[in-house]
Length: 204
Ligand SMILES: [Zn+2]
Image (tube, rainbow, N blue to C red; front, side, top):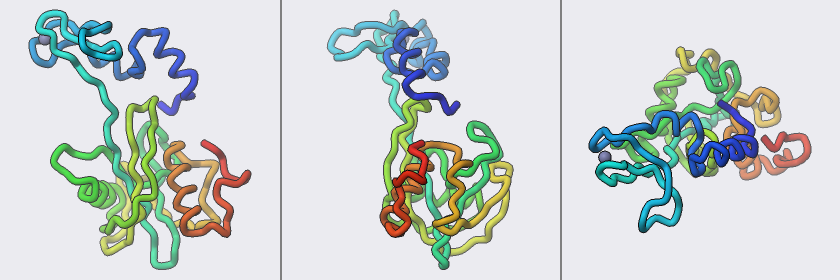
């Protein structure tokens, strides 16, 4: 699902979904209020075209979802990453995280996802960054996190869990641009001597 962003955007405008990624538009066919078909087009009072119900007028707003993640840091200053056991990004490295539940704060979601995926109990600290991945319709929040307990374990979601020294981050095997950006921003803050964002790092 890691698509080229420019290409994907062009495809979207051709498809007439008004910026909604095709994979997401394909799931939005019927009104959740009355069950009639949704139609994409101009809607009175709206500044852009919307998906709306032909029958009851309900507007199906489509917004990005929030993904909460952590960069757990060991006492030795290493950052813990996992090798993903599922698509997208199967077999590549990413930080633990997942979709925020509707009844959670961002801190709670980050703690839960990190525990579920790699077995570590973390205390989220500073926010490293907030990143848009438009083709996936998500906004990704990355916390730096202190490891407070738990025990590293692999799960179906995490085939391997490893702590990397800042200078040994596997840049060529990172799953997502948002992971690259978060690691780069973390390094800029904690290890400016490594010149993160220099030519040695991919722009994603
Ligand atoms: Zn309706």
